[in-house]
Length: 366
Image 1 (cartoon, rainbow, N blue to C red):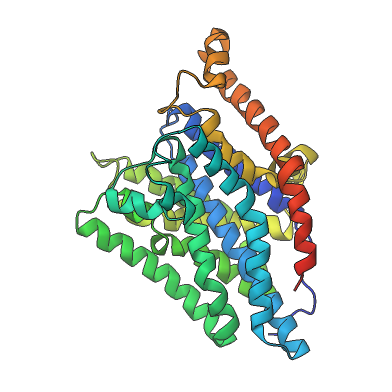
Image 2: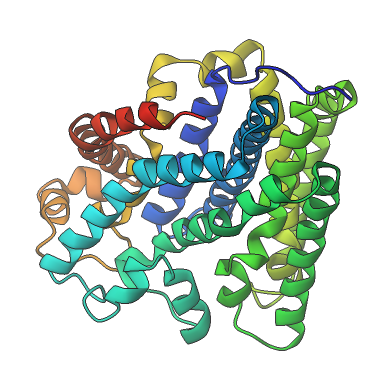
């Protein structure tokens, strides 16, 4: 296997895939699980697989650059954390500040869990959700993954990386099985970072072989038969889990995320190498790509704009819906309306905060 000299091309369809992932989350959350199908779980898992791929790819490129220049990996480690901080922290902490000022429960009471990106740990320990801000658990998982994974890529043998990533998968499934057999509430293995590592590991494995131009992996992930098989297996595991009287059973708690990750692998793989036909048109559409680009803001803001289970009567969006019964009583129109509001707010956030701040990343290239 030979390493690439440059591998930094923008992968347009991945922004389209972000749009699909965040849309699945929004529909599920705003409908109050009315679909009876866990598409929000799939959306979050797809983000994890995508993050595993992109972060591993970035780190492998940085490691190669360091080695070609004969410099320490400490340089790229510093650049990585600065760039992640610039991209992720601003609107997250501004959102927390706004929630603190407006006294949105339980932010003031649990402020240190929010500030330290450990809300997932709070949920796991207390076995309870956190109202309109409980979706921030997935951002905590990503931040915790970023804390240690660069050290693995930069400072351990490059050849050991695939074994480590396979180990992530085994560890994650094993931990979820351990928690399930010990009668732990389902949310604990769902939100902890180590129990999400199979998604990151699968994305990372794809990045490793993609980086090394492995043609066998390209043929595998772009094979439409395997894409169909992974979708069939994912749907099958969901339907199998529904056969149990308890919705949180060994299938949904232990194995669902693994099959979500497997399906997500083929979605990410095909998007990386380029879907064709109708799927290409959808993923490369200007509107789709734009919504994918601002998907971070869309995800952060969506539950504060409207939460099916935790809406304050003073919420201006709720007041608008109360004045528009035709929209409020029609689930499709309601979701379209809420999506439009969220996109407007996320667009303002993108142009006023995120995009200007993101330009700082150019000063910290690898």
